Image (cartoon, rainbow, N blue to C red; front, side, top):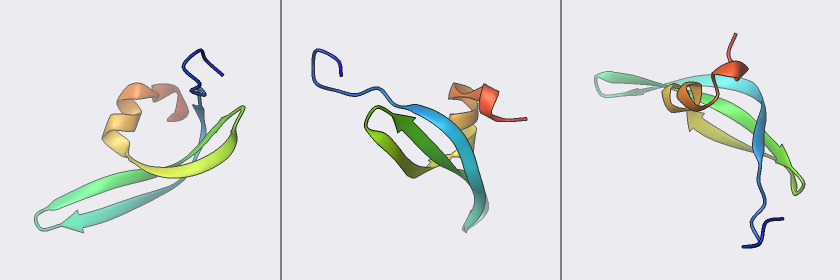
Length: 59
């Protein structure tokens, strides 16, 4: 826990992928498992943005 009472979480692994079609576009999302001292939780993130921030999680 930091001084401002926030908890740092890091991505642990990618559990899945999903493609969504929006009109003329396809958007790729990844299901990310996050973890830290507060426990684990899962969110869907845009693959392109997530790949920029955490390239080590992609083969």
